[in-house]
Every structure is written in C-alpha cells, then in structure tokens.
Length: 143
Length: 312
Image (cartoon, rainbow over all chains, first blue to last red; front, side, top):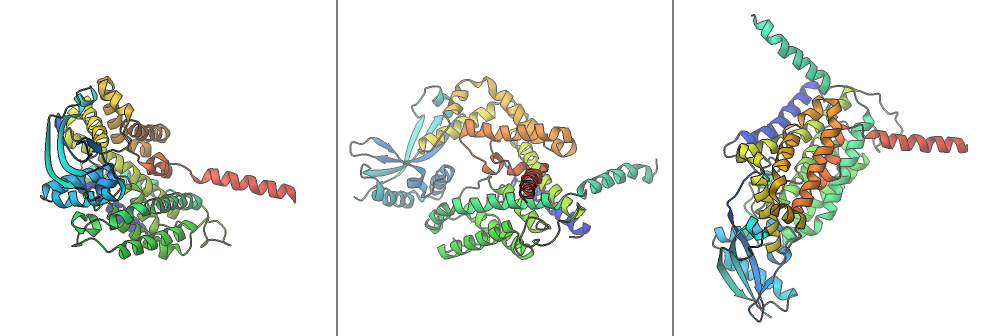
C-alpha cells in the first residue's frame, strides 16, 4: 500500500472513532461506537424488566436468560423484555417464553412479564422488597 | 511572526509522526499479529456459533439491525446466517495460515464484520468484539503474510521495512483510540461527577441486580463493594487515568508496559465487580501491537534449530 493509501486508511480509522463521539446524539452502534458503557448514572430507583415463572403454589420461579430470550446473553434478555414493553408486544413475548418453558420446566404453570423497581444499592444493603411491581402480561404454560 | 515560523513546529511534528508511523519493523511482527488476531476471531466464530443459531430462531420482530445490516427490513434467513458464518470461518482460517491473503484477507474482514454485526442486531449492542473486528480490517489491508505463512513458504524473510511498520502502528492506534473514546464518553455523559465513583457504584449495583433477577452469573464481590463504597472513587479515578492516558503508551515507551498492565487490570476488575468479560483484552491480544510479539516464537524456533543442528 502506498503512503497515501496508508494515510487514507489512518484517516478512516480516526473517523471511525471520532464520528460516534462528535455526532449528536452520540452513536452507539457496531463497530462504530462511543463506548458508553458504565458512563450513565441512572436513577436511584431503577426499573428491572424481567420474566418470572409462577409455580403451582403461586410462588415465583426464577427463569434463565436462555428461557427468557432464547440466548445466553443477560443484557439481550433484559433488552428483549424492554423492547416488548415499549412496543406493547408483551403478550407475544409471554407466549414465546411459555412455549420454551413448556419444553423444559414442569414446575412452571404460568409466566408473567413484569417490571420491578428497586433501589439497586439499597438491595445490596438488605432492602429486598421492590419499590413497585407491574405485571404487563401473564400467560399459561401448556403442559 | 511569519507563516513559516508558525508552520515549522507543525511541519516538524508531522515529520516526526511520519517517521514514527513508517518506522521499519520485522515482517514477523505483522505475521505474529495476524496469527493472534485470526486465532481469536476463529475461536469466537466457533464458540459463538450456537448463539448465532439461537438468534436465527428468534422471531423477526426482535431483529433490530445496526451498522452494515441497518438497511435490512427483516432478519436474514437461517441459511444466510450459516452461509456467512461458514465463509467467515473459512476465510479467517485461510488468513491464519497465510494462504492467498490478498484475497481471503478482505473476505475475512467483511464477512466477520457481517457476522459480528448480526450478533449485535438483536436489541442490544455489545462492545466486546469492536476491537477485534477493526484489527482484522487493518490486517486485511496489510502485508501480513510475508513471513510465517503459506504464501511466503520457500522465500527468505524480508528485512525490516516500513511496509511492516505502518500496520503495527495502525493496530496500536486503534487499541489506544478505543480507550480514549471510552474515557471521553464517561466525562461527556457523566460529567466530572463520574470521578466521585458514585456513577460507577450505581452501575455495579444495577448490573449485578439485573443479572440476579434474570438468573444469570453475577459478581458477589461487586455486591460486597457496593455495600462498602469507599473505594469507588479510587476505581473511577483509575479508570479515567487508564482510558484517557492510553496515548502515553504510544508516545512514552517506558510507560507502555505499565499502561498495559493497568488496562489489563482494569478488565480484570470488570470481571471481578460485574462478571463482564472482554476476552480480546483479557487474553492480551488487544495490546499485542504495542510489543515485539514475534520474539517469543523466534526464540522457540531458534532453540529448536539449535537442537536439531546439534543432533546432526
């Protein structure tokens, strides 16, 4: 590659890093990103979208990211639920998860798509009761 | 003061940068970096195939394309995903071996970009493979097979040359730039308040609780530190020093190793506090362009040659 070619490549590489930062709003895409990980403070009380299984006796049963989102990525699972809530599509998500659960969990009778709100720091200090709990969808697991 | 007087420091700096960028380097250094990056990418492709196949089973409505896939209206067919993966794996394997690199290099870079973009197009952008993808793109355009490759077999190793220097420098610039941008984002988004450690403590608490509620692996150590918050100010300061100070690793040779140790330690800390793994960094490959990575292999080969000569 010629020297001019190298400088063109270098200019492109610099642009790859500078563009996501200077654009408003900043770009968090792939592979161009402003790498905003761990940058935002967030609220003292945060919303945690999750999906819980309901047992025969009405108790909550924890589900895994694989059952919730169909993959092993927990952030993907959380964003999948959040996306469904934003798009008023929690019923479809509930049904999809119920179908997966039916194949592997005999102890789960129903699924609830919920958002629970916690003060995350207080949770680790012992305050385990949610500030709020909102159920968006409930569906039965076909046995 | 004349224009020439103003311009001359700039011209001198440009000249120093040019000499630095094109400093002659060994062909084996670029080759070693080719091997390391390709080994990582190939390992990623093999390890993440089950995940990619899981994604291909998801409903189309959950596809949220980003980057080069943004123009797509719907998720690609499973066969297309498998096809792209196969081409990426084959091309990267060929690049690893240094076979027909002028052809397979760009094919590997493009298909790996497509596959990794696909993995990031389901409502969540991860940040763990950006550096590997960018490094692969640089290597695809570089003379990375002049040594330790099938393309170069039977030919003598070229002398140190500037054509092997600029790829190494560009790879190093990419590594350093990623840290600077991440540090800038923290100040841009969080302001100088980020230095107090409060943002970091909230993030650690939030991330770990989210993992607990979703039934995933979390960090008990992170929970302990959240309860004892005195060190988060130190963690925050150390984070910004490492990220914004990354250019020093390029500009001040004696700071290179301490910076790499600090950056690697930063990622170890992320694992410890948040159970988040950046494998490209933790394996050290992200920092390889800053070092003479060919030397351990050369030493092994020299030793083997000495032993076989002694037996003759």
